[in-house]
Image (cartoon, rainbow, N blue to C red; front, side):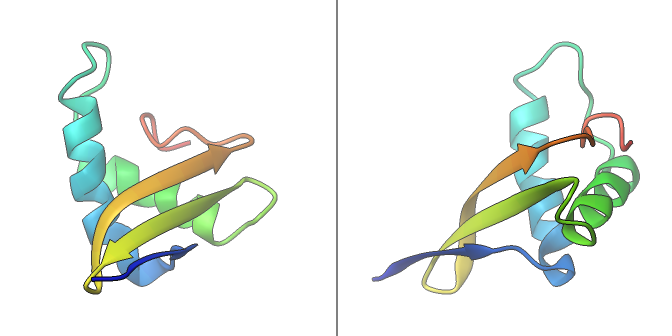
Length: 78
């Protein structure tokens, strides 16, 4: 079982939203909202000046991510 780290793509957005659900369930000020999170994630993925999203995969399944944000919040989608 090899763990890989790579840049996320827009096709990863549904899984990234699920991972954000886990994060936001631990935060009192944020609520999961896939439409809002998808919008923010897509903005990040389409513009490297906004940030970068790295994912880690194990057996081709995304098991974690790191988001380096320069200007966009996935919590509020902008």
